[in-house]
Image (tube, rainbow, N blue to C red; front, top):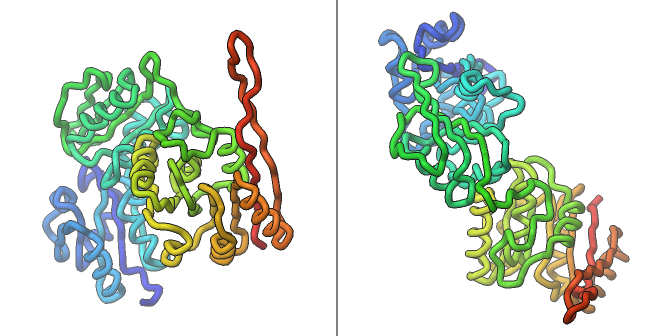
Amino acid sequence: MGDVTWLSIVGIGEDGWNGIGAAAKIAVERADVIVGGRRHLDLIPQAGGQRIAWPSPMMPLVHELIASGGTRNVCVLASGDPMLHGVGVTFARLLSPSQYCVYPHVSAFSLACARMGWGAADTTLVSCVARPLEHTLLYAQPHRRVVIYSQDGATPAAIAALLVEHGFGASVMHVLERLGGPRERIRTGRAAVWDIPICDDLNVIALEWEADEGTRALSPLAGLPDDAYDSDGQLTKRDIRASTLARLAPLPGELLWDIGAGSGSIGIEWMRAHPTCRCVAFEANPARAERIAHNARRLGVPGLEVVAERAPEALGSAPKPDAIFIGGGISSDGLLETCWDRLPAGGRLVANAVTLEGEMMLASHRARLGGELLRFTISHLDRIGSLHAWRPQLPITQWAALKS
């Protein structure tokens, strides 16, 4: 394909044809092929090129359009701003900017903030379109304002039930239907008493998070309380976990391998650091693997991938990581060697050991490859009869290294 602009991506709202600009109208009128949802196609004049409604799934048609790119002018219609959780993002990942032009409309997010009187910069946008509802739990902090793009008319009731289940029934929900059109409507109520089973399919939810009495809100920072996790005891404890995450240093868009994941705490808190952080958790024990997935859903990162196989055998087909954590005990140099070999330049590796044999392996790798070697001894105050004393945990040795 050349660098000829052959694709126009036009945002359109409930105000229809009259609401889009002159340049966007020309792009629609000149198109040989117009692609969009049936609702979008009904909003434009009947004259023009061939009309195609998006199939489900849509990606085969996306690839077909790209394969024929440059041979005909294509116009894709999208809701509001195509680059805000829209189809424009899909095409932008696959094409060079010279091949397409985007004509954005006012987004549903902007309209929702305008109707609510909320500052857009202080409001979080979450999409539940073709994504698990549990993504919203990542933002479960009192007084936080979130706008949720709904999958359909059943989403508000499902969100209300999710909030009640997790102790946020006091949260106020504003369901904004048909924003920007003549049938616009806003429905408001607390999640605990939400009694509208089905809203208009075209809706967004403006959510004001509030915790129920007795609900403990969780910080987005590393070091969640140990009892935030369902665990059989295989859990990196809170203080060690905070140190481990600090040295893993998650950045937006990066991928972590969590090896010997146990309850999944390291991978989960890596993903909680930023919505685009990703993790593959390797856990050979099937019950623990299932528990990791359960913890990930409850803590707002349902996208965490769990591989119920043993490392290093399971690592061969995994995508290249930006960082690796090895927990669950270190029983062989082979695992450390394999992980170091798979790590790209600039990647970080952190490994924790509780046994003398594991500590000796970490010391050997540190002597050869550099990095930090740390030893943590943590004690907690405990009662002994009517008095108190410090009860120590097993010491933890940690090797943290940056690959040059």
